[in-house]
Length: 433
Ligand code: GDP
Image (tube, rainbow, N blue to C red; front, side, top):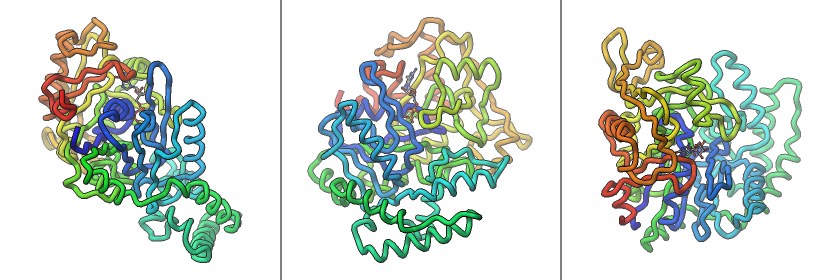
């Protein structure tokens, strides 16, 4: 492998990016997260052992790979330390393998309260956030009052002033509450000391690797339809989860991105509120949720489930310039008498084939489905394309045509080994197979 690849979500998240990143990591020198916070939850199984990662890139499970947390990520220091301790307890060495951007913004204790408050204020119109303070931390970043990692090592008086200002603004918002800014500063300085050895200039580090021909994998969290600019606004996350986030969130130029791999489930899920055109209800939804174990890795919330939506993935392919797809969870569809994929949206104005910006238009849209025969032979664990039942292959072919992008990887189970890499595909080329 000599090119740098971005791996990102093509739907509404939870596509199984963790497994795909973990699978590709041995071919890279570093794995770099470019956005999001500890609201992301990547579950990776390695030989039956389960690892849940929130902030630390999934590459950490491979010794020798450096894991980078970019400036586009917002960091809750306590969550980070907790995750590192847990990894170390399970025998994964983190020290010496982690680099955190000095420009990354911090999540402070009052960001969590503000998150809860903002959701409560929206009432019925709530976004369905994880209440971990990520949105308010990004708000402070854009509002130019955020606290960055490098501020913990600079002028103490300047840090005190910033925190005092922020805390008094928060005290004005949260009635009957008077948070003292002093312990906030003390905690921050203590966190800084604990983090110091891991902090550095991510852009310089990545540029150095690339100059030496050592490839980097750019890891996305959440997904394109949750992107702050291109997702189903306002039911989105607060960062650019799509490919543009790689450049802004790590300080790497566009030409550094040699390939883009989109991860998509063989059906669709979303957690939280907002539109989901192919959503199923009742027994059909329960069937997908149970066999796919569709419960959030971060919050345990049940995910909403529906059929594969090719309009969505086509949109993702355009926004991100996807070179290929990694199609995950094909095995979850095993045993269904019929499978469906959505190829367009019927609206009072005619059939939409492009994803609309206006959520009201989306709410009126009726999915146009193509129905295909299901398969009764289990696909779970299959590692060669030709061993898949003919109906499953047919489904993948139609899905590729309708989405306008090739499925170079098909995942047939949660373990690393349960994967098909299509021979002669883009990804096979990247991996030199
Ligand atoms: P991420 O945030 O995109 O990494 O996704 P999550 O970790 O939230 O959810 C993906 C879940 O699906 C994890 O529990 C994975 O172990 C599991 N998974 C990934 N690929 C497959 C697959 O092909 N089949 C099945 N059954 N599970 C899978």
